[in-house]
Image 1 (cartoon, rainbow, N blue to C red):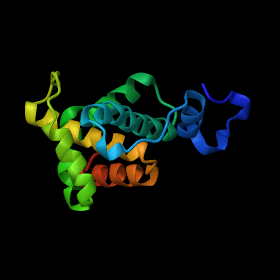
Image 2: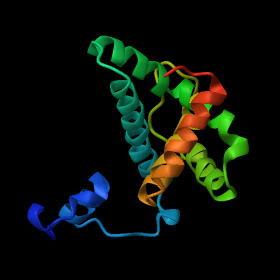
Image 3: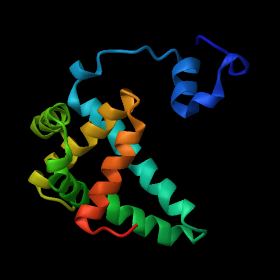
Length: 153
């Protein structure tokens, strides 16, 4: 590990703290395999949705979980990707295609194979943007996708 907690600039956010404390090096994220990007992007999307739900007011966790599950399931993510197509750059579309064309070993139990692959593309995009530190773009795409799909949050 490169730095101690005392030496780390915590004002850079969680991402900067993790990178510093765990010695995560910058890489060419464009060359990264889409499935690890999707693995990370799934958590990024989940964290954004959970953050918004909690910030909107104190509620019982069962209600929070139900709302979160409705928004992060594969079918909802596939709908988000479809709604975002006109809002994506060519580079973002390429990452989504790579994610959709990957061959994940698993499939969602409550989604079609096509929905699962589209969701994987959406998650790969979010993981790629996160690693590139494009946090504003992540938030913008999620907000736009929720609006375009009519999803209440």
